[in-house]
Amino acid sequence: MRVKTSLTLSADLLKAIGRAARPGENRSQTVERLVREGLTARARRESDAQELAQINRHADTLNAEAADVLGYQTEW
Image (cartoon, rainbow, N blue to C red):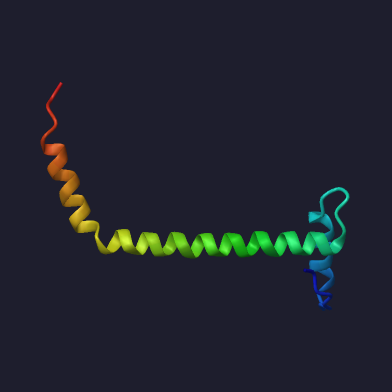
């Protein structure tokens, strides 16, 4: 469901939105697409940061396990 709203934007941002529009896409569609893309990218960055923090919390253990596994490899 779409809800009509009003935004006040700077002229330079409005021009950038116009440049970002795809053929046949009106301004509302462009703004909605760009906001969705931005929110998706933000969620991905937050998820990536959480995953990296978790990896870093366990880095010493993971590195020790990797070194142990590499110790079982034979020389060619």
